[in-house]
Each structure stands twice: as structure tokens, then as C-alpha cells.
Length: 97
Image (cartoon, rainbow, N blue to C red; front, side, top):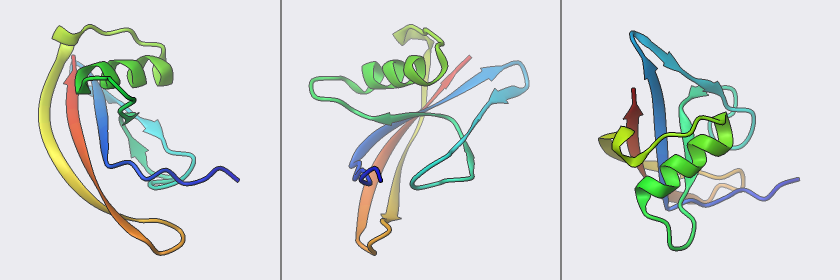
């Protein structure tokens, strides 16, 4: 079984085309079974934008450029792991049209 991540900072991208939003079904960990955008943790030395673009490409194959990112929000989430421990994660939310 894969160990649960404790992300303290993360990115989340929503791909927008016209009036449609491309979403993905979460298959594991926090949010399993829910529809969401694309994103994840920030690796050492990455900027928020670099992490958002890397995660987007890894998860969808879509290659976007920094100028395509439109930052919409910064949201702090309180998460509970399966062992009952609690942590906060700051998520930087972007739209890409």
C-alpha cells in the first residue's frame, strides 16, 4: 500500500474550453471518488507555476506555458489522514483556457 502524502503546498489546474471544464476522477487517497482538476505537490526548487505545468503535463499530456496560467485562488484545506492525524495544505488554483 502506498504511503499517504502530507502535502503542505500544492497546485491545482482546471482546463477550460468554452463553457466546459475537463475534470478527472480521483482514484486514491484524499478525495477518492471525487471529480477534480489536475495538480499535486511542489518539488524541490520548483516555482508554483513550474509545478502546476509539470503536474498538468504528467497527468494529462497537455503542455501549457506559464502565460497560459491564470491564478484564481489560494485555498487552505484541513485534511485528515487515514490514521486520524490532521494537516493543513495550501493549494494554489489556476485556470488554463
